[in-house]
Length: 312
Ligand code: GLV
Image (tube, rainbow, N blue to C red; front, side, top):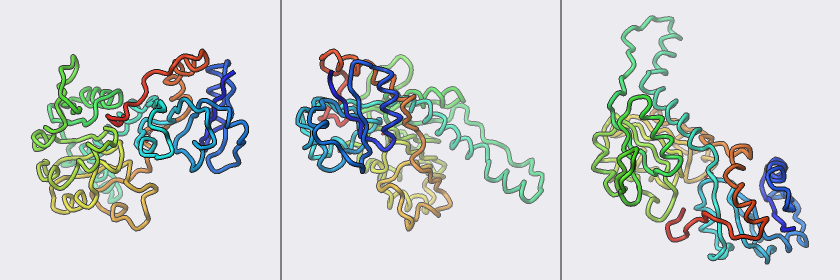
């Protein structure tokens, strides 16, 4: 029987779900800060993990596969303790669905003028002038158009927006126009909303900077469900203050938890949420790893490993 270690703060839940999914493996769970069992780990060939605790990889000489407990693997790819040749697979579970809901609720809160309605309610004032904005035909840009981006794109299209996807290199697609990321700036002046759901790679780090934001529409709503590192925070704050965009809805930050002294907390045009746009529960994630669990149990190589050169 091959051994898989689950090192996760909710390891009990994951181990249960994984054992149920594949009975031909010995699966054991450990808390990332809890005691480890070195002799058992020395025989484990698979590792199911979010962030790798320091020194863990050195204790696993037989390791042949790392399964990420999430979609973004930037922190695993930049971890010097992980050998470059080790296959890492990722899982995005039902993030697309959740992030589509997240995007819609925050965009619609702005365009349905929810804050103002609450305020006039508080004042017991009937305000028929608070007319919702019609989003029909308005342009939505979605940066990163994998499974997650596509689902967000579909949801935005369903409520009437004209959705344009952005990927590394433009390609024909049956469902949506897909442009090269380098053309984002050219589209920005037309956009009502820009959703970031691309992986953090050397190419996307700091992509949303003063330069790009200068091209934006003053009514632009920026939604970031990807990684904080895609956005240069100082440039974003400056652009918000200069009236170059309407609102920034941020679920992810360069530093998490967001430090208490961050100006983002109190900025009137910023919505801060605690990295909750895509909950990574075993129920949502396990279907993504079934095929590789089966292959692993049968001694076959895992598939769909992250391409280190691309960064996702
Ligand atoms: C969460 O941020 C993930 O990448 O899964």
